Image (cartoon, rainbow, N blue to C red; front, side, top):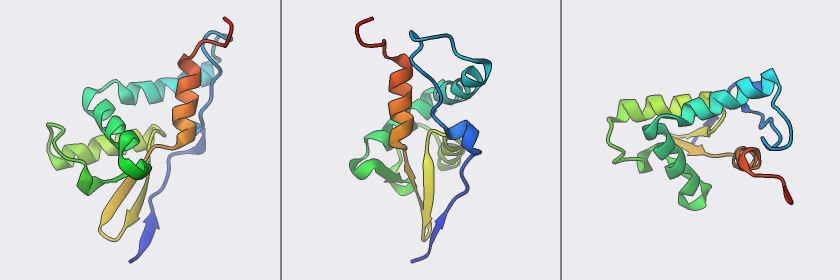
Length: 120
């Protein structure tokens, strides 16, 4: 079995970037990076795919496990690509299948961004 890691987006688009919104205003760069992630999640199919991958047993999902989201397989692949380009998913080719995972740092950063600072 041959394993091939698919290219990742540029590091600056993947890096969880920002402090909680209640801590201080975002810089222009932080807002731009964060907007890319939220824009990708602004589509209901993408949000559902992100949720399917994030909640899948073992923390990763094979594209073969992702079905019944109401769109064709080519459309699923397109949306998964957009989520990967936004830095929300990473992927790895194993044989003929591609496996997707949500990086824990991405979930943690998104949670921190929307969580009020303790004691606020």
